[in-house]
Image 1: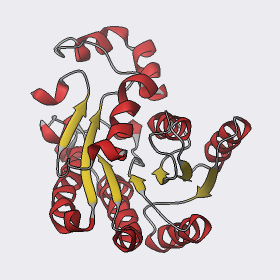
Image 2: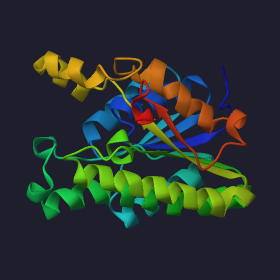
Image 3: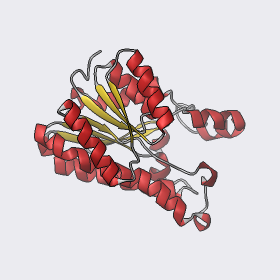
Length: 255
């Protein structure tokens, strides 16, 4: 307990799904958490839920694809708490009606949606927090990749390509920022999110077929299987780990 005591964390997409799981675990470990969330409804609900439990949480309505909005929100966090120690780049928008999509059917609109909210959002948020982390000579940047990019999953041109861009930027930042006490890593989660639950209910045979090749043939629980890895990378215990891609996906990223 209290592994993040005194730390200030920004979690993008922190209002629901994996982001909410990270926010809860970080709060339980003593961090002050800023939730950057596009959905005002889910962002406020998570803020209220965690505040009722006595935690220091602030919701910011934030479109991570808008650099000015990101810069303004980060500035408020820094002024409010005097520091920014941890950034978890979790936000990602997709058009689920368009995924998976064959390359010849992939539209420019879909490419823009995935890239602006994923790779560019990760870039904008990281660019905004780095000056504060450099000043204090401490920081943890945790980005989100995907086996869809690592393994070149067919029909995921838009989504997978920008996830690999995130992995590339992460390694650049690891080399560029390590001397300032800032680490930069990628996690690749395979989680039973609400969207995954709907998929499993709608197509149980398809779900079983998808997870069957994994060494651990299931999707992970956001709080107990995925969030502990993010917590570790955010903690002092991971101070000598940087530039790495680590899967919490039952072994999917082995292939």
